[in-house]
Image (cartoon, rainbow over all chains, first blue to last red; front, top):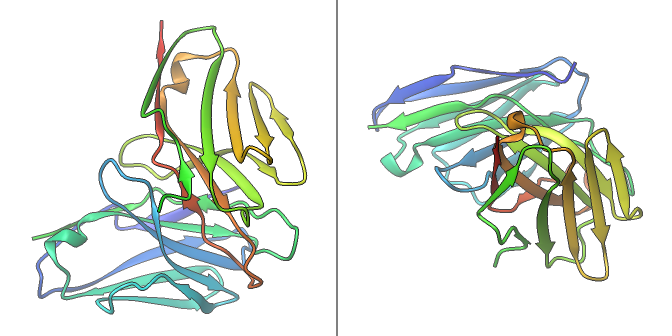
Length: 116
Length: 115
């Protein structure tokens, strides 16, 4: 089973709203990721969590706030977003990596976010 | 600067023939490469991967070739089937010493299989 689930599937929010995206995996993976994909563009890395600790933040604005409550769950809290933040937000998970090891990331279906 | 390049935005192949998708990279620290298939408004689906210590990996109809000296990899699909029509992303990662590394994606190639 390589399933990563994301909720909600679609989200529409105003610029003053606070909302959260949720991601869950039950594969025993120790690494989880958030990516952002704009239309006709490739996914771009936002955050990496390894063993529930934030290990990579790709200079993402503070209006995006990630949280990893436990090894199976990953949240992305959204506040005061801009219309240009509208995109498909993808969550992924993997076993995690040591030197020389292969580490395949499995993606969820994504949350389509529209900011009005 | 684009570190992973897929120079063909689209590719049209007849059903039953071989599809060859190409990918070039510039970062010599990349040591693991993956191919994903993606439909609109869905997440990428993992297809096949290759480590930099190998030059070929095969899984059913899918074969990935890696030429490290040329910093080039390719995905071969044979025979091509109508269900293969999708956008294919090449992705790469470099071990940074932590427990996990993000992927750098190419811009994708839209593969169209003609009946």
